[in-house]
Structure formats: structure tokens, C-alpha cells
Image (cartoon, rainbow, N blue to C red):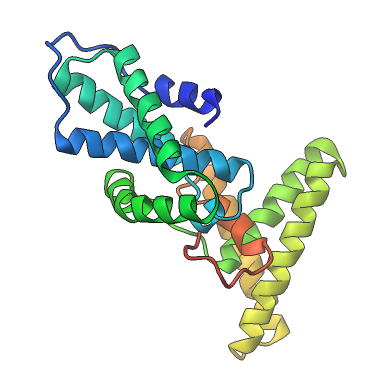
Length: 231
């Protein structure tokens, strides 16, 4: 696993505790193993490894989970930040050696993720996923904002394309539900206005959206029937 991801995880840890170090319990060892497994999968997701993309996106929540686990282990055992870092590095190395490459590695990580994903979800619940209409509105607003700032840059072009894909899929879905083109227009316009008002309110509060914005990019991607999880 790239060391830059290890460094990211370490930044989430708090200052060292001062209590005397004690051996790791079974639960602590399990949690460190999950930190390692989640970090490996997150790193592979960044590189676009297909098997890793079967799982929910883990970069943000995985790093937060590592911070929570690290803080708790430092508090409970007296280990300092460097010692916890070494524990994580060792856990990553152990998982990589255990998994090897190819189908055997996928099987090992599938078993580990079956245990670790529920722990992650319990500690850091995933943000609510926007629906297709919401995503169509969000991507359209994102395109308009970037276009206003940058003109028809590559980012703006990409957002425009994704917004068009989502708009088309949203209309197809509404058509299948028996709605007319005019009714679809009204609903999509209302959704954009709602998303814009929410974005302005969140900005005024100094906060970002409560929704899982990344899910919109998944909805805009080519459909893959073989995936085990929705992102």
C-alpha cells in the first residue's frame, strides 16, 4: 500500500497517551486488521482496481475509522502515535502477505471485508445517498458553477456530460413510471431549485452537503450488474 495513504491515516490520530503500554486485546487486534484491510482496498480503489470497486468508496470513511481506532488504542494501551503507526504498517504487510495476488487475494479480502464493513458502518454510518433526480440536479448545478468560473474547461465538459447522462436516466425512469415529459421537466426543475437552496443554506452555515455526493458519479457510470455493493 502506498505510504502516502499510511501518512494520511496517521494524520487522523490524536496526540500520544501517557499510560503504560499493555498487550493488544483480541478486539484491538481485529480493529487494527480492519484498518489495514480498509486502507488496502481504499488504495486499490484510487488506482481503479476492479475488484476493489465492488465495495463502497472507502478513502474518506476509512481514514476517519483509522483515526478513531488509533485514538482508542493509544488511550487504552499507552502506545504513542509512532507505535500505533508501526502496528498499522505491520497489519498492512500481514494482510498483503496473507492475500498474495489474483483470485486468492480477492477471496481473502472478501472474507475480511465481510467482517470489517459492518464495523465501519457502525462506527461511521455512510451518508444518505441522493436519488437519481437529486443527482441530476446536483451535477447540473455543479456544471453551471464550474462553467461560470472556468468556462468550458475539461472539468466543466466532464460535469456537463455526467449531468446529461443523469438527466436522461432520470427521464427514462420517470417515463417508465408513467410520467409525461412535461411532468418530468417540472420535477427535475423543482429538484434543482431544492438542491440549490440547500447548497446555499449549507454554505451559509459553513458546512458541506449531508448527502453522499460521490454516489452521483456511480449512478452516472456504465451499469455493472456484477457489483456487490452500491457506492
